[in-house]
Image (cartoon, rainbow, N blue to C red; front, side, top):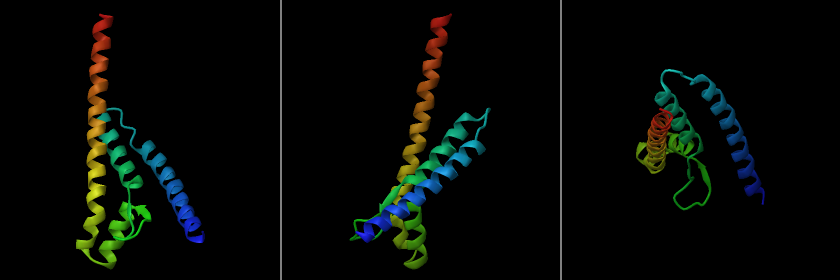
Length: 118
């Protein structure tokens, strides 16, 4: 029971710190002229913060993938860091693609609304 409470405490502290960092980053990236850049940066940071991955090959505990990449590269070597880097990279790519599709859909919806008004 103690291990589970330690894991929950660590995740809670990490997510609270991540939320504070993300809120500050959101304020920092409020670009009026470059909305695509702003949204893409926010999506990348959010993907980096919240993507989990397994701590070990046999374990069932999850930790932030960024932490796993860093710890594996420091302790085991760069080859071991790939196991957590791949899902992190895929998460980043998926978030950027989602942002681009969302902006394209919003742009198309804005055009249709403007055409209806005319």
